[in-house]
Image (cartoon, rainbow, N blue to C red; front, top):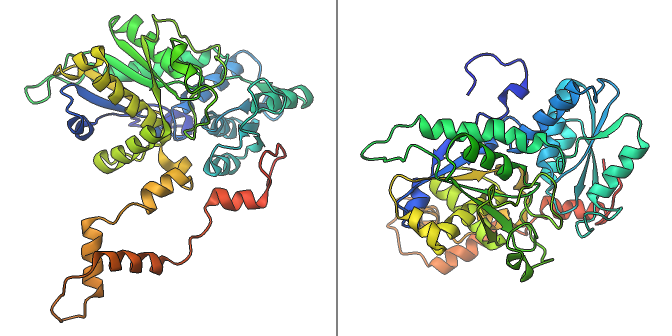
Length: 408
């Protein structure tokens, strides 16, 4: 972390902590060290800050960007857009972000707050359709003077940013932490687990591990059910085309920056929405980390690999081996999503909540009588009144789904 005054927010991109997930490990009976690379602590709130900074700075060096003239246009799930909007606000470029409708309202709000224009596109559109977020970005680039797509799907600076920053940060944290009797360590990164969207994160981190640090490091890719990124292809066929809620990972095409070569990604695990969101809840309640849905995918993928595969079980049962799960972003971007509201607001009352209800319902200074738990629950629900529409519902009421017209 920075120990001096930074010139601007780009100096606070990356440099995120590697944190032990000991309670999660204990819940699943793991003897290995389970570690989380917590990317929401980067300046813009996600792992994508790194590639946004790298792509903008590389384009400047190559003479492709002109302050006061250039319009950076990018199709994105949102986090790359936020990173780009942050970088361009600092450097003086206009920004247009095209983003599927399924992505959260919070992402759009953050983008607009940073000065970006946002165009929503149909979630169901195929990646190569004119109305998709990629197709719309390409149309805007053709017709807007000084428009430029930095193109995270093909830009070599995407995986390179992770090879030069994310991977080395993980390596440094592990190798600089001494092995002790109470916390044994192999002294190296033995396994990395990461979700794949564009694929730049997992490809770049893998190259850092295998080229610079530990050629035997096992890299596990996590791909949501409904996506086609995993190998072998048979992993994808059962759920191909299935709609999934988790954002930022998975695609219906193979991005150029994703290396599916076994020398880069050793094995793949498919993840479900239910597993991902259950893992988010577990991280929050046990480790105090406010992570987003794709972080849950990464963790659930790690747990599934460690507990359900032969290679994973060997790692899980070996003290001192270091397993790193990349946690791409935080809950900030998903606070109004139904899956999160269910976790946060619709959980069964805890024993402490019932105790509070008993205390507050009793007559002061009178002997307390046992309260009926069912009655307390019913009274609690009544006291909340009718449910207010969530932000996405309110947004849907204001504009039709599938619109590609910017809303203000």
